[in-house]
Length: 294
Image 1: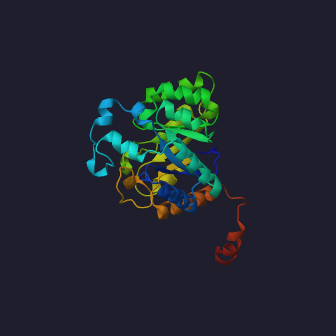
Image 2: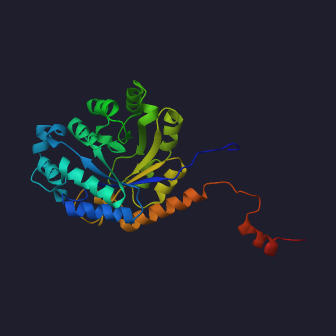
Image 3: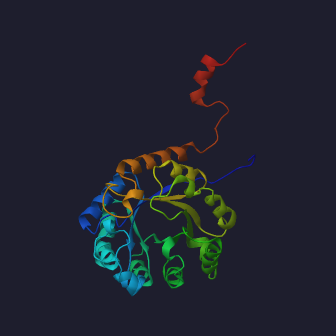
């Protein structure tokens, strides 16, 4: 550790609203307001073309957790929660208006093409579909922004395949961000596996653009630890009330939690440095008063 040096940068915090708006535009905008007030830099939604994403059997099957369902079938549930292109445009315009950056996860080729038309700063690939190479090709070849990609429930050789795919035309180092992630809602601390961030740096620190942490755990301590390990982006699901109906609310931060997270990350960022002098000005008075003189 003698020559340890890491280029710590101001952490970037994403409030993942996802589908926690419960299909209501008014609530989506309220969550955007709350995210900004809580100190987040970005808000993120989710975009799906459900009939493209799901098989007919999946679309027509019952929701696996009926008490969280907004429809008689899983397809109906997903359609209820889906904002169309015009609604997403309205959300982006609202974000621009109040001064927070909009983005979205894309789950299929159609959604990727639709959201590229907004020219966002980045688009996110969820762990669930990071093996959809038709969609990855669209994001690699037709999109100019950063491609953020989670590697939850993904094997090491699959991660390598993804990175090599972006390296094919020299897009990994300039545009690909990898998120350390464990897929679960919520995830117990022992399964968060923060040292996977070290693995990402060891294997891809020189090959991709950035490395981040996408958490589905409880509390905020692990996010701060992830930042000190080198995660430059911190993504957390965000809701107004964790008891609300839906799969993601339980693994989300409420406004109070997000406010504490952004506050603590800022403090840690300011603290991650070496002393500027052997005796700092704040120490001088204490040295004069307390230092042993025998």
